[in-house]
Image (cartoon, rainbow over all chains, first blue to last red; front, top):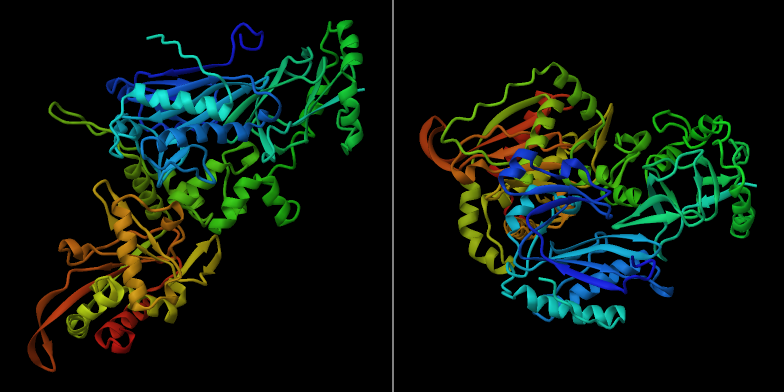
Length: 192
Length: 446
């Protein structure tokens, strides 16, 4: 729809029920529960078309799906990832959290722990999939996977770092920083 | 004239891409801009449109293969064209340039005869050049074998962690070592030696599969944490790989005890770390490893790797399991340096703040069952080490000294060692060196 111009550049910010999604680079070894265990935890497992390995989504987490037509200098896949990280780092900074990049692994980190995961897909330089930021996620659910296939690292959330912020508040900051970093005017439309 | 399809550059810093899926098969007709294949680079997946219209004559790079940008991944041309069939080798710049101008011409041709997918002989011909000398074949130089088995990212990680890629069995196409394969080796530190692969698989063939444990009412079932699973795999692999032998010594800790009491205040002030029995033991182990270098080694098939550095892994128990942070280049450290490293690594292990490379690269390991009161432990070797030392609890025991009954602080130490490389006599030599060092501890080292 974006390609044919039926919609303009769009950013969807949503909250998902408990779900584990696998990207194209996923290894089944990184899903650590079997179907029955997953069902018992109210967790469903889905395969997706985004890049990256396995991740978890659930309540207390903001999942962002930017659908942007990248133009000119924006047409750089890694640059796009770095910009998504920048939006999240700036938003976290508004809550006094210092998010960092890791030279090796995409995503936003606080110390050795990942606070936001990123996995995207490009078709005709139109973006899909996006990022997941842990605001007050139940981190125990991450125990069911090896997040993004990176063993030996942990996950964290804003709540775990002592920041009690509502999803709305965090979304407001994300929207503001998306406008700055991607140079797009943002108009909000609630679909709740 | 066939058009070459190349691996596109998806960004300035992107040097390679993995073909994850071909959306068209050889013989299919494609329109210009129609999605042709999917690629994956780091965390980005992208759908790549066809640069031209025509028939897909040849797939040069199969799914799962990672190639550098600008590499030819497929050829598109008129149906019936040979697609090079292997004959058009040496892709120079010229065809690429032409490819950009070709689309119109090609689309005209394609419009006419897309009827039959052409003589399929192009299919077998296509798969042949796509197959770069099976990685397992011991042809080419060692360098070439490394190149065919890995991508630049994987080679970089391997170099950082001192892993020999040629010894790994990759899970990728043709045994290619993927990033996940190499990370698994880095994290778990399992087979630095390929010997462990055959060794562990061979016996497992004869080990009968156990029936599942019954679950009764009132029982609780929960999945193992990922740390628990890693430990489990590592322990099973170690027991399958190394025939373990254990030798025990009893050490008189009187001298160490006296020195500890005498120096602990000053030591704490100077170094900021406690002067524990573990600090003395680590120092004694380092000296013994220098004296008996075969204990500070690894096996790589039939090769023995004598490690240049002494990297001491220290087992630290956590609520959820166990982790073995590593004191790197311990041979260069003073007692204070050892104490500071021990405190720092243990503290950060418990707060889960260790970096991945701080739990990798050990050449020998120490575990301390005595810290919980254990008298003797029979530890399992932390692969790819060939030995592990277990410290028992220090307690006063009645013993005979110069034909008189005396009370002395004593400690049992155990050495678990890989009998493939280390014989009993070597183990004795190693443990007696430690015993001598501790019983006659050199005060000037403090």
